[in-house]
Length: 521
Image (tube, rainbow, N blue to C red; front, side, top):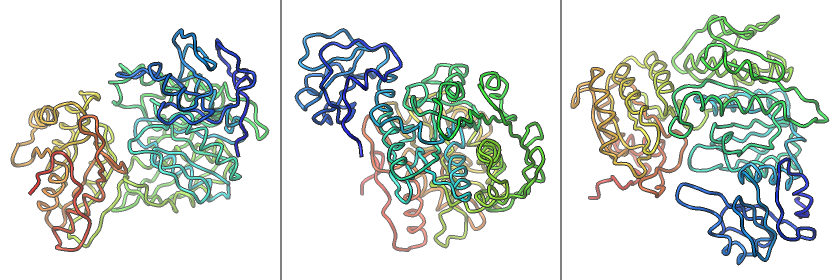
């Protein structure tokens, strides 16, 4: 239970300059709010600047709703409540949130997982290994927060929650008796200080490939954002349980060389090509799983992973690095944890309603992830591989060409459709993807199709499938909405796949979710 701390004590705890205008000595804080409409009496209202809005404009609304103080970056005077002026509002908010919740990260062993692809799967693997070892652990991923027996949805779209939410999750875990937490950490979460103050002990990376360049500007800046996770290990406060300050890097990835110079403590590297201190050998893929042996410096253990695909061997190695190498968990126990891994929502998730072909929903939404997924699925099916996917609007445009080309090369049939077009023209997005697919050898109307409505695209794929084929829908995975314009519409690829299959099989089932592109009868 949070005791309302004094604002003055929270300010003293900030590790950065803060100009205080007004008397904060006797102000009690009841929480931190980013939206003036959600301010409650006693909250500190944080003024964040976005592309189209500026939180400073909503200070009167926040005060009217009972704000006890305002935190911002502009020079503002004449307020009736204390004003805290800082250089970076997001960074200050993160430290303020950590202090408000009494620094929960200092009471936990915090394992951070970052990378372009595989973060959620790797986080779940680490979580399962810790549970198998009897460790009281929690997890915050882009899918959900696991706090003991409680599961909390962390949002519609994939990103790290805002810093007050992250610190609230960590505080809840401390209150529930957790000793460890796995914190999935995006580049946006690092660059925007959403995880600042979380006090990381172990840092893990999966890979760094082509993604988010629209936000970061270049691969180098994207990599630099990822590196912040490893650099933060040196800033972690001393903890009663010790400070591992341990890094786990992918020796097979181009990020390895630049990152290994930035780690402040111990390092384990992993590889499926024999280049790491932790290696996978004798890899044996099966239709719905994969088996291999993990070799450490003086041990080896066979592993059965219930997720198919060579890429997940790398994810398993990353999880071994974080648990066996960094935390000293027995390798046999780690193997048991991997073997007990449940289905990760929207990650190579099978939808089986009795149809004579395989149906898969997967989150692959980057060129590399799509390539790896298609190669994995190619060996799973005996018939054609039918791929359904899109590319998001207002995001890195180069991805559209790369994903169109990849599918044209690796899938038998490509169906291009909507995936969060936002305020961009969906037809224009599809045209870019179709042009690249055609240049790579696809024949429009034969092996490649454009279907703007995602529900219709999935229907087309399902009705096209023959016995032995494999239909895979990529890009949304676990997500529960799709953005058209500036509105989020309810959407779930798994529900849409079930609806299409039920229609095909003439079974009772869920209705196909409707989107603005849906044709109304």
